[in-house]
Image 1: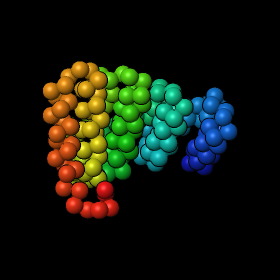
Image 2: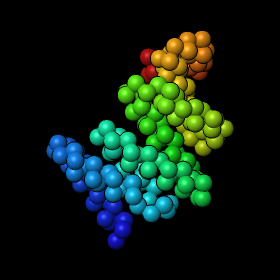
Image 3: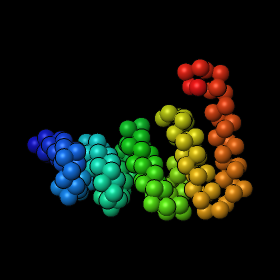
Image 4: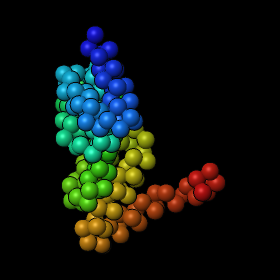
Length: 168
């Protein structure tokens, strides 16, 4: 019954958002991020966090992220860590949009510190994308030498892809 209610909240939240009813959509996002911290609710924490960020309301997303971190700690899996990486990065992107470069950079640094786990269990491109966003944050914080170093690393990672026409 709880799963059915969560699916309903997720779908209704998206519909309300598309219809321009942001306040009701935010209520649904809030409810999704308030479910019990259990592995069966990973999808709902993720969806609630994404919806709240799309609405410009980061507080429910932060609660969703905390729940995902707790789930990852208690029940580690590629699914739980992938969901956590995803929301951590999305919160960082949200903070970038607000010009909160230092806070955004911290989100990307958290992703970068998990390099081994990322390469072992997830798409390696996440690491490069996190490095790219971290470099942007450093540039906006006037830390040009460190920013340039990271941009050079991003280019060195993606340069071999130029041999594949699909990526041009």
